[in-house]
Image 1 (cartoon, rainbow, N blue to C red):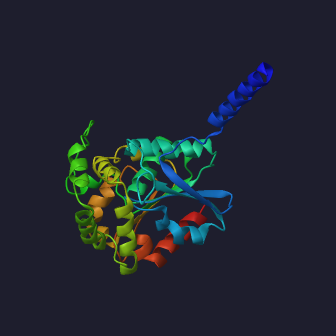
Image 2: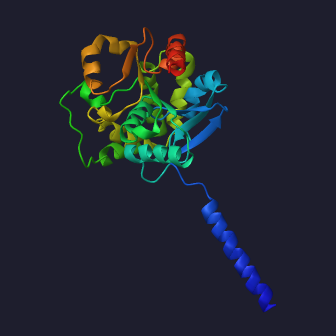
Image 3: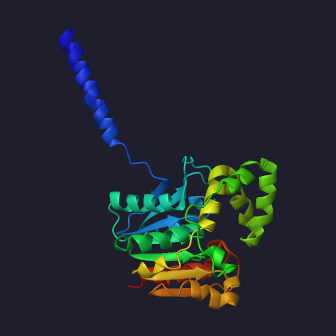
Length: 283
């Protein structure tokens, strides 16, 4: 009986060890993998958005590419992390690329997802094959203040307190007023508002504050891969200040949409897909 008990303990010990080492490393996002192409696309949604924002994009390209579509932790109903930060999200995506041996992926990012794509390509240039930036600037705050300098230890507590103190109805009202300024297609506005409503409020506030403090204007000089920058039509009226932000990015191809707002993939679909097709098919 003692021998049986000892063997049982040994077996349970090894089972526990296998379970610990067999577990997937935890990343600050959920991943949906589709397609079986040799080349990979990593698609990062924007602020408070679901990976579903890329549904039409993956439907177009998954026959030729393997698509890794992310939804960041705490956004659009995904489980939040205790301490979200732009830098930790950047490190998490880079770690996922390394761990899963994804060879020179094309990273496509919208809004804050585009900021993450720029940061990864700048800090891990050896990992990335190409980047597509959908309506993102290296430093959002510099639009209103060109001399903006990010704070080293930025305190986001007041922003968190402000957003978490809102009732659901107050928050919905704010998003209902905000989203039509970012998305012209009325058929998708309720969907995007719903993603915000399903987002963890603390994560929403923290990442809003953290990304507002992010300045990549200098670090993008380290990006070595071809870069396609797709910008909303409004930015065409601000070309000097927009292009000043991207002046340090070598191999940058800046293209301005002729209609629509921030969600270019919904508001100017034909132009968006033409730009992607041409860029992804080029050597």
